[in-house]
Length: 104
Image (cartoon, rainbow, N blue to C red; front, side, top):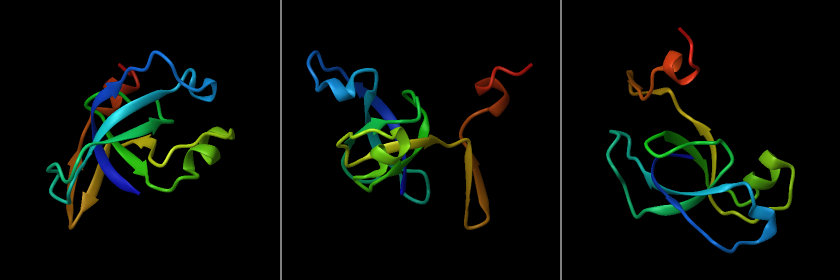
């Protein structure tokens, strides 16, 4: 698994019917300091993430099948939206949990 930021989405007018109702997102991997690392990739979204979200991406081809209990071919699968993580004693916070959950 790797950490990435969603930088865009893919619009497709025609796709296999097993993909209907699911999004393909453009991701950019992050290094340990939170900076972009490597080329942008396209990932299958199983976490209902959006542009700007920091996400956890599974790089195993079978993850989409396990998450959705359905036969879907996807090398990269977004399996979670991160609110924060801690690396080398430093915590990085990406979103306000209360705002995201619409708490008051």
